[in-house]
Every structure is written in C-alpha cells, then in structure tokens.
Image 1: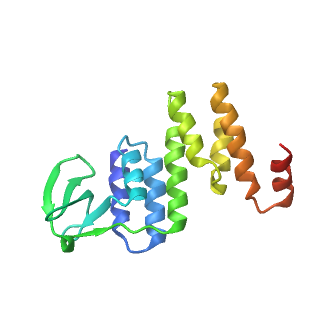
Image 2 (image 1 turned 135 degrees about the vertical axis):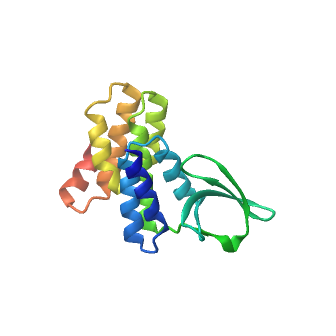
Length: 171
C-alpha cells in the first residue's frame, strides 16, 4: 500500500497538470496516513521537489532559501537554495480537487468535530455533492447531518441541470 503512495508522489514532479491530478487522486485513494498532510501541503503551496533527484519534500522559507523535509519519512534534509527546489504548481481545477480530496479524507473521521469542519470546507464546492451525499447516508451526528444537508443544497445550486438547481432552492 505504501508503494502506491510512493509511486503516486513521484507523479507530483511532472509538469503536466493532468499527471499531477492523477497523482492527487492516487494519493487520496492510497489509504496512507501521510496522504492528508501531503494534500494539505499541496493546497497551501508547501510541497516542492528537489531538482537533483525529484524527491518530493515539504519546504519552508528560510534565510538560505528553503528548509526542506522528506515527505515520506519526515527526515530533515537541511537548507537549500531556491534554485535547488521547484514548487509543485497547481491550477484552479486541482485546487477544487484537493479541497474535495482533503474533505473526503476527513469526512470519515471518528471525531464529529473533524467531520463538521470537513463539511464546512466543502460547502459551495460543486464537485463535492457526491462525497457529501455518501456521508449523509451514514452520518449519525445531528449537527453534522444538518451541515451535510445544507452543503448538499449549496452544491446543487451550482449543478448544470435546472431541475437539480430548483430542488436545491426549495429544500
């Protein structure tokens, strides 16, 4: 299972947004405990790769350029100059994909507060309706259920089909 996570990580150093989007899907589906941190790091712009070996790292600005840490094992890799690393770029489509993937991973949490925050993060995202509906079918906490129903209605407002939008307004 971690092999698929590691394989998916390597796709993040590709220049094609399509290849990176596939990598994001594979990371989210990997079941690896490190997936959530990587997806959040991508969304916040903290995931880079080292040019010398395409190693995926967390990067934090420092006086010398960047302080980098290995994504796989958390090992500190020291400081590098800005020319030694390249930020993993994402586009707007990937931002939506990342938000949905992050929320999808947190929707399954045993903690109701974590699930509620995940629902709030997904509110208004048109590509989130399916994940929200799936969670609504099994959610037992009344507060989270209420937030799910609202988030689904908001997502449906952005649907292409007029009947779905109308149903969202009347629900």
